[in-house]
Each structure stands twice: as structure tokens, then as C-alpha cells.
Length: 382
Ligand SMILES: *Cc1c(COP(=O)(O)O)cnc(C)c1O
Image 1 (cartoon, protein in one colour):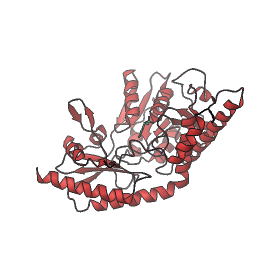
Image 2 (cartoon, helix red, strand yellow):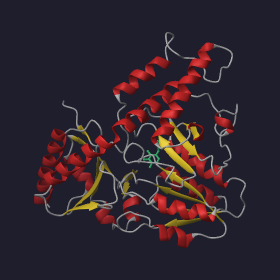
Image 3 (cartoon, helix red, strand yellow):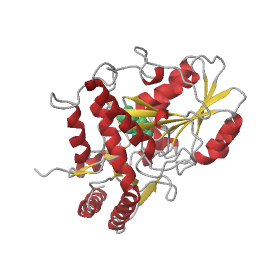
Image 4 (cartoon, protein in one colour):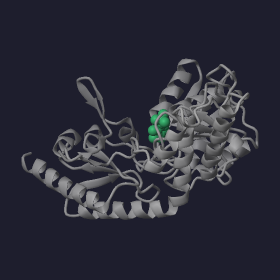
């Protein structure tokens, strides 16, 4: 059977073949397999040099200093390290976040709440955007940290990080930004975005799964408490033997993304436009999330009179995602869609189509034709 069209790039991306080719050089007996922490021989030095080259590549994409990059196992760990590490040791701390953050932030903040830390949960407007004024109004003298995502993984909408960060810098409040869906999708520049901590992931940017990074600003100097101890790697912030091949892969992936960023954005905008154009003949289709403040690769649509589960069954030639997290017998509608004020009914009618580097115009034309066909059929038998 022909493979379905992959329209779930926001969940993960395939590894770019050029990245895989680079990674394999750091695994086998004929390659550079040394432990980057081994200081007494060339195997270690070579591995260390590769890790440091990758550190520069990741830093370059966000215009950071390589010394500000801490390797982790992914954005989930980066979020945990940033939030727990920033709040650690502070008794009467107050934290601000939003209801539509990734689970890695939501669950970490809930854990803080269970430990007696006060958390304010901001509710975004119906377009999914958290406004700077909302953040400023929630600030208290005890606020130590604000954590907001740059690009939402279900809606693709973009937060005004620069405006929020500037005010937080004035107030001396730490600012953590989850940029897992933003790096390689829009320009990210920490020299103009006053962010203190930023989470990055390898596998959302055509790198391997299981590797990520946390940007930790050096000026002004940001201090976080380590969450994993043992050996003092990464300047004491994150111990554990560095996975050279994963790190090299993430570095290469970020370098490729940086070189092709403008072209890739243009390509995705064009694919998105063609896809939406192909759905024009279909009535009762609404775009969830902001139409203007967004990245092109994520398209979240609700289809009137059709529930997402039936639609997905009908769209078996497309690999897409519904926002719903299936919990045993009942399917809970996505907390992100409910977080922007969608009724359960509307949230149950939403599907996320996410596209990327290897998506073709033919695939998009096929996808929109399939959707028109299946939605029309489902509506007819209602
Ligand atoms: C995927 C994702 C994460 C988790 O990243 P992992 O590297 O898979 O742990 C965190 N935040 C956002 C916004 C994501 O899209």
C-alpha cells in the first residue's frame, strides 16, 4: 500500500538525510566514538571538538553565544530544567504561564503548584495569542518567572516575546520561552528578544529525537539550579555523558535550517495557500488560531457538522493529528482548543495539518481533494 501523506510535522519531522549522514560518523569503530569528557586522548578531544562545533551551530540559529547553550535530552527536559531550576530555593515564589502551553510546561507548573508555589494561568484571546498587557497585569512583587511559548504547537500562533521580555527585564523577572516549534520556522534572535531561558528541540527541526538544548543567558547572568547531578557536565547545569551523535545531528540540522530559513518560510507559505485554496469550495471550515500572527507550517481547521474522529478515519491516506488526547473510553477535546474558548463540540471538529521541508504541492493538492471528498460524504449521511 502507498504510504499516507505525512502532515504531522508539528509532532516530529524526519531526520534530514544530510543530518543522518553526519551522525553515523560518530558511532562506529571507524568513527569518532570517544567520550567528549575524556581529556586524556584524541578520541575524547575529537568528540569534544564535534560537540563544540554543534554548540556553535545551535547558538548561531538564535544568535546566542555558544557558552549559553546547555545540551539536554529534548525540549521537555529543557522546560523542566528552566522552570524548576529558576524557581528552586525560592520560598514565596510566584510564576506566570498560560493555559495553552505544551504539557512539558503545564505539568511542570502544576507540579510547582503542588509544592506550594503560586501559579497564575493566563487565558489567551480566541486567536490563541497571549497579550503583553495580560502578562504585565498578572505581575506581583513575588513573581520570579514567566514561561510562555514562542509558537504554539497546535495552533501555530506566535507570542510577542520581544515586548513581554523588555518589560520583564526592567522588572527583574526571569523569562523562559519554549521555542521548540519556533526555531527553524521563523527568525529567532536573542539579541533582540530579551529572553533569559529558551528551550529547543532537535526533532522538530529535522534533527534526531532525544536531544535538545536550553539557552541560558550570560549577560545579565542567569542562574538556574541543576536538576540532574553527576559529573558536573555542561558547567554543572546538566550532568550526563553527552550523546555526541545526537548533538552533532542537532547542530547540523540547525545549520541547515539557518541557511535555508527564508526560502523554507516562502515555500511553506505557498504550500499553505495552495492547500487552503483547495478547500475553498467547502463551506463551514474555520481556521483556529490567529490568521496573521502565525507560522505557515501549522494549519488547524474545524469542519462544521463533522467530528474529527470520523474525519480522520475517512482520511486514512493522510497522517494528521486531532487535538484530542484519547483517554481510555472518552476522548477529551484538546485543552489548547478549549483554552482559546472553543466549545467541546467545536474542539471535537478540529484537525491539525502540519507541513514541512519534504511536503510537496502534489501532496497538498491530494490532501485538500481528499478532505473535500470525505467531509462532503460525511455531511451527506448526517
Ligand atoms: C515537541 C515540543 C516539546 C517537547 O520536545 P521534546 O524534544 O519532544 O521533549 C516541547 N514544547 C513544544 C512547544 C513542542 O512542540
